[in-house]
Length: 281
Image 1 (cartoon, rainbow, N blue to C red):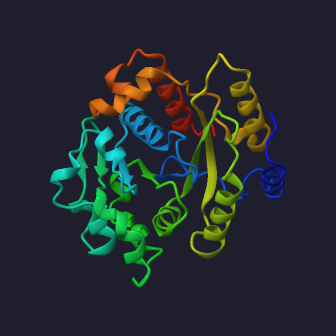
Image 2 (spheres, one colour):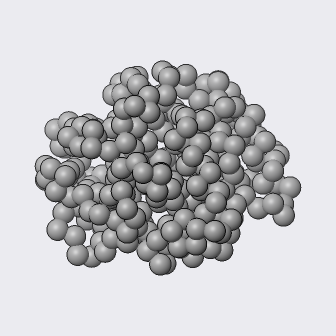
C-alpha cells in the first residue's frame, strides 16, 4: 500500500510511537484516552463496545464523553436532552464529576455524558485558569472507584483533547482499514509527545486497534500489515470487521456487544477488550 511519504517519515522518526514508560499496572485504575484526529475511524464505536465488554467481565468502568455530539452517551442509552449535569459543567462550572455520572444501559458501566453545551467549551476554556488540567483534577476525585476509565476524544486536537491526554495514563488509537489510515497519525503523535513533555510525563500510546476491516479487499489486509510494521506489539491481534450490525447498534442506544452478542462484530470487540484487559498491547 502506498502511503504519503511525509506521514511515514514522521512516524518512523518517532520509532512508530513515543517511547514512554511501561503500561500502567492493571492493579491501578487504567485511564485511556481514545483519540484520532481523523474523523470516521469508529472511535466512539470502539469506546462504547470496549467499555461494555470490559464491564461485562466484572470490572467497574467509567466512560467520559468529550465529544460535543454526545454519541458515546447516546450509544450507551443516555438521554442527553434531559441532563441535569454534563461534562461541560465539570470542565467550566466546577461541578464535581461524581454529580455528572450516570448509570448506562450496561451493568458496571457508568458515563459522564456530553451534549451540545460542550460545543463552545474550546473557546470558553481559553481564558480559564488551569485550562489543560481541569479534567485531570476532576478525574482524580473518582478514579479509584473504577478499574477502567475511557475518555472519548473529539476528532480534533484542541483543548478538549489536550484535557483528555493530560488526564490519561495511556492512549488507544483506532485506525480505519482504508487508504488514508495513517494520515493524521504523525500529527497526533507529535501532540502526544508535547503533552508528555509538558503536562503528563507518564502518557504513552499503548494500543492501536484496526477497525472497519473488509475481508473482500486486498487493501484492508495491506493497511493492517502496514500499521503492524510501524507500531509492532502496540497493535492488537484482533481486527474489528466492517459489519451492518455494528453500524446499526447506535440507533438502538446499545453497544453491538449487547444488541447482538453472537454477531461477528460483537465477538471481535469482546476479543479486543480481553486483549486490553490482559495487557496484550
